[in-house]
Amino acid sequence: MLICTPSDVEWLEYSETELKTPSDFEFSGARRFVFPPLLSKKEFDNVFQRINCFTNGTLIFDDCRMYFQAREDHNAKIRLLVGRKRQKMIDIYAVGHGFTEVPPMFFTFATDIIMFKTTDDITRRKNCIKDFNATVRLQTEVNTKAQKQPHFCKHFKFS
Image (tube, rainbow, N blue to C red; front, side, top):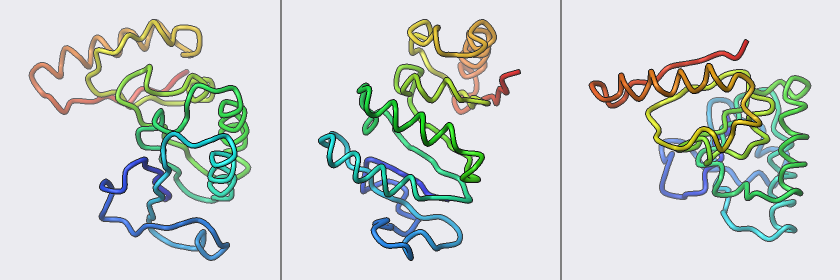
């Protein structure tokens, strides 16, 4: 499992990796990679090229909007990565604190959502969420149950 995070103070229970040499990709268990936010296009390309070498495991992008700004060149790279996830034998999790915190490209290829309480406006992602009406119902259900159980969440598989 490779956890990409914009913060160097989170996920500290996992060893950090730089992803600079082939041996950095040869590990068992989990590693974290600090993905610095607000990179120039050239810096982003360099970092993303390294992440794109990850195969055969789980890839988590924590607080993904911090480093996937809404730029067309970033969307093309996300499309390439998630579009080839089967060939690379990876499962990808894009983690955000609401619908607008996850770049739209991730919804295009999403097979599942794990939803916690969010008051984020789901309609801003209406054109990219596969089963929008079911997702609205899911948000209503989760938010209602979370009033009594603050950590309630629900897994939803798109049909």
